[in-house]
Length: 329
Ligand code: RIB
Ligand code: CA
Image 1 (tube, rainbow, N blue to C red):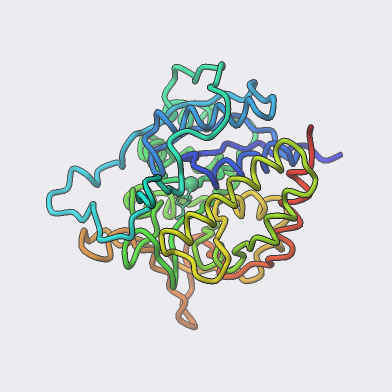
Image 2: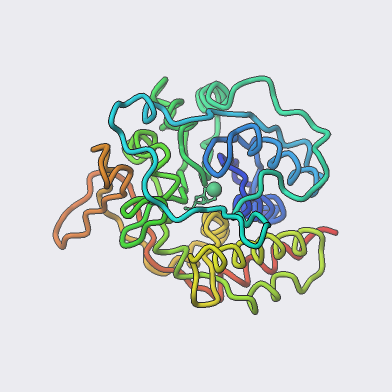
């Protein structure tokens, strides 16, 4: 049997993050060294607690959780920077009830396990300096922790096998009219990661919305009846219902973003259109702040190993999720 690939997950759990975490753990294909938590969907206090809850649900309290940064590297320090774009609310009170994409706490028992005392950035720095084997990073929140570690010591990129990132949008956006939420919340960190020199695969909204899931698909995920499948299907259904109530979806489907990173690591052919192209991030502070820019002009030769996923195979994605989440109790 081939050796398990060493993996560190950086996330802002978050309902789709929770499904991604469960998929990574249950696949049994990774040696998950740690989960580092970041701000984004919620403040880091909640994303850390939610991460611990998910790991306990799967009986994987042995995977250490390192709490990370609670805001972007410099974004909030920059005067005049757009920090509150006119966005559609991601929570709203409808008929006296709050409807939100990401509830503060996942509906799981309070975690008994404690997070690590060491900060996520120093954990990343220490681990990536000391490792004898290259490590894969999967990032599905604002990349402040990874960006900070790379800033402190850019040479750690040599020990990164690759970084798979959920973020950005080539033709799509969600947080502002130009930017996706993870990149919008820390554009400088996204730029540092894209330019670090290690191979980076960006899974943007274009790909995740291309494999959006319907109610029928969600029922398929739930069909095994395992603890993970039932919990994951509940989260995905809740997100679809919230998307409909908040006016984000009108076609009976919703993009399940973060797990596509893990499914890509499990089976790269789940992405059907992956382009090697130069990438940049708008840091202008105005209406395009945090926008992912991809140079797909014919004849342009990228100088860095940055790849952008444009399309996916929905049936393969659903099958990977269904089979992986069917494992366990
Ligand atoms: O834009 C989608 C991304 O933002 C996902 O990672 C979701 O969890 C939120 O962090
Ligand atoms: Ca996320």
